[in-house]
Length: 237
Figure 1 (tube, one colour):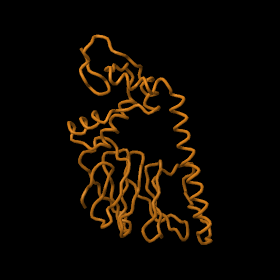
Figure 2 (cartoon, rainbow, N blue to C red; figure 1 turned 45 degrees about the horizontal axis):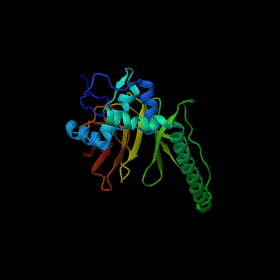
Figure 3 (cartoon, one colour; figure 1 turned 45 degrees about the vertical axis):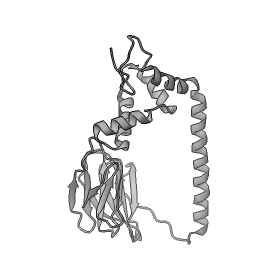
Figure 4 (cartoon, helix red, strand yellow; figure 1 turned 135 degrees about the vertical axis):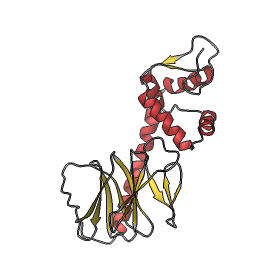
């Protein structure tokens, strides 16, 4: 006997529907996933948030290489996404198209209302490095950028010149965020820690939030600046 590789229920028969790892990834791309009861069970048993349970599920799907055994209930759900992948894909494309049209309309409206200003470029000394995240300071005077070369850079908005480079990350930077008073900058990466920087001095503080077994995808500050929110759980300053 074995367990269903999706919901974990014990399979009551020796032979169950099997899907290759590629087929499972295709089904997931078409919308197939964990049922709500399965998500609730994973969350309660593991003592983690819903977002962390879903992140672990997506990681398992992407990293899987063996065939998956499914219980009758999960197989029935999977069959719905296997039977009409073209329809599922067309719906996703329609959603993305509508979002793109809405984004263009909003951008056109904002450009029409915005005061005319002089465009400036950030003079990056390392060509070919991708920017992975960006944030304005609350007063609009400084821009923070996270980069593929594991560095966070601060820029003067008025001149477009680099103010400071913050080094310390050992993995791809995923997000940057200023505190409400603009004195602190938080940055996250595929590491299991957040890094908190003093904007004025560049001093670094390493913060290790509880419950993060994998990298941290994003971070934000509470309005009073006393709490940071890495994706999944808060951390009090």
